[in-house]
Length: 312
Image (cartoon, rainbow, N blue to C red):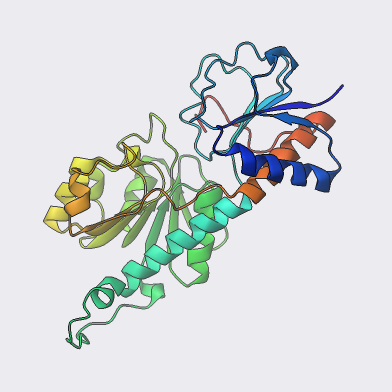
């Protein structure tokens, strides 16, 4: 019996993923029937999914062994009551590398004060200040999942003292790992530069409130490539106005695209980037999808299985 894979991630992505998934199958010697057409739901073994697709009712897919998401975040699919099949989120090397590069670039940008020289090409020789060395600039990362851990290790390798915070205690060589409410307060107090890489859950909604911003050192920097809902927008604007936060670089927002009249656009202390810190890379994502299909067919544990109770 053929292994039937339904690509329910949208027509725009279908041509590139059809080719990439077939190439990944060929590498593994895996034979599948792959289609983006509306199939007989009872004959589907796996669903390749993106939350922007039209599919929302998973009830008819009674034979489906797993829903394989192309997105790292699962907050738009995990709560779906019709989704009773195992759900796997996307963790792929290309996405992780992209996030590490984006985070490292913006950490270095703020650490070195690059903006003053990039935008100040006005004939003035600005040699009145110099940045500290990386070893004297503390970085805190909220969230020590795949992406947060990779970013923490990369920044530590550049000699930044890195503190990581997560809901449950982690142990990562070279990283000061904290957890719990008291650990969060300590992590924020150490954050000369704060990187937020937590998933969106009920526990992380508005995590960065006025009270939490007040715990950070005056003149610190915020970098958010995680989820827009982690940040209380009004609290951030107030923290920027008071000088508590010197600058915020934001890649994710509550509403995307960010509306043209949102105050972030015009604020001199905010950099807006268009949710590009960690786009899924087709070739590497296809390899993850195919590996999970192979595992499902051979009875091995699926990779990156979502814990529905935790929401990620």
